[in-house]
Image (cartoon, rainbow over all chains, first blue to last red; front, side):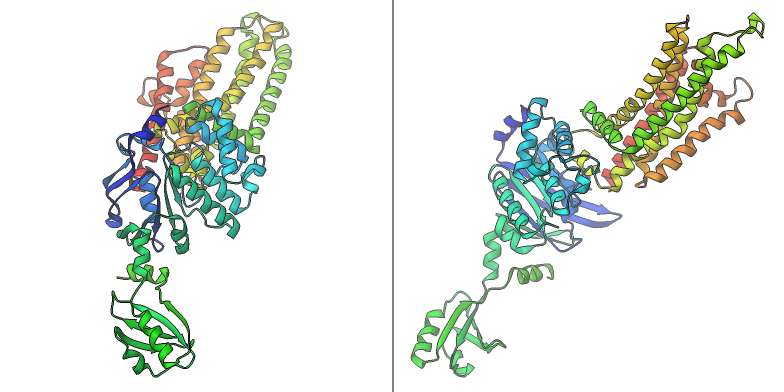
Length: 314
Length: 248
């Protein structure tokens, strides 16, 4: 089938070029560009109303960009929408489900509409159900399923045709912790063979499943890089130390490379040092020498939330 | 691809009580009409009237059955067509269709064909019912064919109009009301404006184009009228959905 030949064609699966979307003169998304390669999981982060969903709608051809273009595996979404759409699976914010159908019926319809041959439909449906943990729900009406299971059916319909690119808009909303873990495993697994784009505002989720992160705010792409880069931003020039018989703060500040020390409410001391240096050893040595009773020393990481807040409030 | 979507629509219609109820009620009423038509035929034609004024059994019964069928479609079509697109809008399922590898034209035609196929079941039953007259009488098959074709074209036009109004709103009930008013308007339009022969209103009126079929006359001009009507409203629907994609 055409789908298979295209698989090997290009490493880059998604490329967005200067995507812009205007709503009555206001830019919901402006000049967003990025590329995604096969086998990568891209996390889309941003506060509410930042333009995450709008971008995803444009990537999937549900919304025409005001300017810019989207290419899926080299196929232009605007010029050849049918061919490009055959390569993507999309779970919108609200899972698109026909509530009057059973899970099996709905997935069969999905498989048919995505052009899976009638012989392969049954195995495709079974595989999707099994991957999303829906096997026992086959005969149930979608209407009667809980929110979490409905969400899973939504994911199942997005991956049933084994698309090159899977785009999930907040896939873990409304799931219980165990389901969230399952879905994360599933996303990671999908990320091996396909490209996955997911949007979320659960920050740890990004760290767990994504290779790449994009932070979008007020329609602008304000951070685009690998997850390691984001983690690096978190490590600052601070150490947290805990001392049983703490000396005066000034004596701590006398240690080379330490610029400032302050005591915190929880009894620990935060030490600021010259960026790029690592005064930990010297502090330990000084603590031993002065018998300060050191019981804890650790880098004072900025939480992912703080990085996020910093970036989006610039 | 179009057929797959049409099948899905038929499945959805059968999954809701609405579809079954409408099919059953219409079939019940038309069956009743057919039955009373046969009874009346013998009473009316039992020699009281002069032979020259007698009419054939096909047109006597066909007239009342097909006449009622076209009238009831006026109510049935809005009830069935209202959900086609507005329900998808309401429950946010349009992205599902928009993301599938189908063009908007395929989506719209698929939905249209699904509904027409569903109503064709009813038209088929009506035809079979009248064909059973052939078991004991000489019937006018041509008359039945032209009436069936006329009814079918009328229903298809109603469906295309209903589909368009369904694409305008996210509230199925609103879609049903507007469709009903529009269809009713089309019907009574005829009463007020088509008095004199040859006026332009005669060309526009749907009933003026439907009547020849009811008399047993198949005219290509009438077929063309219905086809143009269907194509016009399907195109409008496609444009409406495209506007969604463009304007969001």
